[in-house]
Image (cartoon, rainbow, N blue to C red):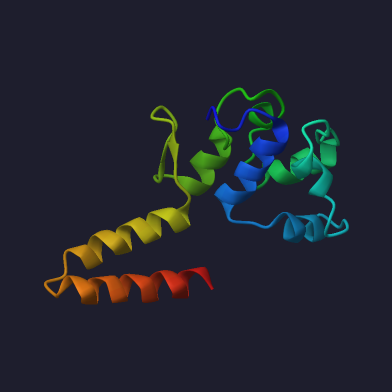
Length: 132
């Protein structure tokens, strides 16, 4: 992932990947909702507190990837426990369960024997319901 070269960029990409807001995770961690703001806005601030890194690793963050940019975004053990069989680390592709569900639904709807416009409407309704 060459486009996430600094820890703040990597943290932002991680939050996006897991579909969580930084403010929600801050509150879940027992901190102010703005706790992660300085880590997301500046490449000079890096999370070093063990309890915070451990908390994020429960969501799959590979700490080496976050700090050094080495390895995959999501920890291999986390992937084995939570995303199996929806990942392929060797291919560099990691998909969350939600991404897998959307992909399966799209494939199913595209095979329906109905007009393309109706397929589009069904997919929009599904995705809107899914992200609410």
